[in-house]
Amino acid sequence: METLITSGVEVQVETIFQPEHSNILKSEFFFAYHITLFNHNNFTVQLLRRKWKISDSNFDIRWVEGDGVVGRQPVLYPGDSFQYVSGCNLLTTIGKMEGIYIFENKQERKEFEVKIPAFKLIAPVILN
Image 1: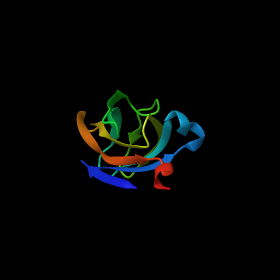
Image 2: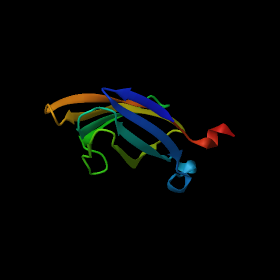
Image 3: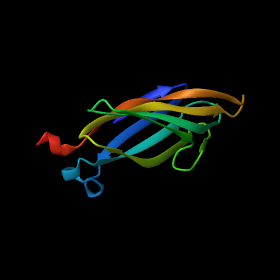
């Protein structure tokens, strides 16, 4: 598990290789990632947008941006947490994801960035 706290918001990431959605013979590898967000601030925050950098071992880089996560823009009151699961496909057995969330401090109506810790995507087939 990777964990990082930025501006009072903690991001925890766990990854899971999904063999049932992968096709190893065609070099198609699918990974799920489980993210938990914790608001350690004494004010309410809302996740507005995200920006991901996805790299693979062929040095290909993709950028993914959009509003919210999994179709939601969750509001986290002080002490609240929010969890979601999403996924990523790669054409190689190894990759990496990292990025940022854009949150809003609801009290001051100001946006701020929260870093998503870099995490590895490794298909266990290469570990044998």
